Length: 102
Image (cartoon, rainbow, N blue to C red; front, side):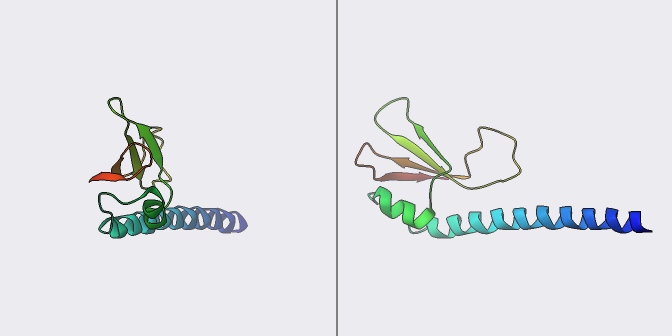
């Protein structure tokens, strides 16, 4: 009976951890999507960071002096290329928003 209680406790703890992590990711992604409506071309880098937080990935463009910033979170992905579900094109320094690519 003690072994069953320990096993049940471990399963319950694991379930709680996974649920809390998935819920946390969902809330963060929801906040990014909600605040995305306020992102406009010409917005400064600092304004964008204060609205959406730190980007998950920042990638330089192959052509032209641009960067692509990604936002979003998935704690359980094992894909090293996952950067988020929202992509924003930034201009050359001083960085401003060029366009939102979803």
